[in-house]
Length: 177
Image (cartoon, rainbow, N blue to C red; front, side):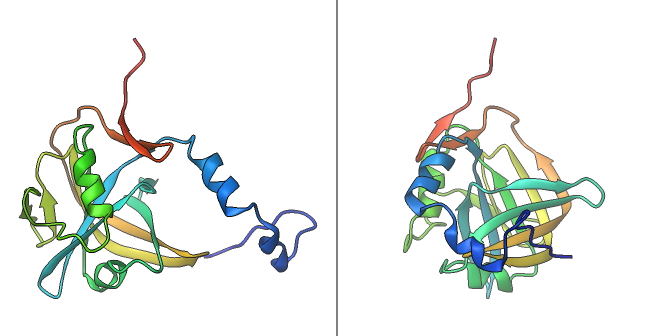
């Protein structure tokens, strides 16, 4: 079920009065987000992208989600895949996150270290965790696609410090004493 909630007294055209894109980006930049790389095998080739919109959705069934820009050149290949992997990045993997966010880069070439997962999706080495997911739902939302995946397998590898994205830069989490 998809429901658009506009609030009292608003109609469908009121979304056009939303906040200016620059102001919106500046406001969201103060929110720290975890960083993952979504990978899949499509047409026999590995594909992947960096996402900072990853989140858990449901425990029963176990669902996770991320958003991808509809204009992403990687999205058509990810969409065609029969499953995908979520690679939860560790605090020392900012360079990897940058590589998978860069257009036109050979993301799986050296120095990226990866191996095929149990269903074939690339699993990046030295990440904090891997989640293997089946596509569950896709919904167009604004200029992005909300992708929901059913988690079929999870492996926690090194539950150390996460890589975060904050104010346009990658950084590390430091816990309170």
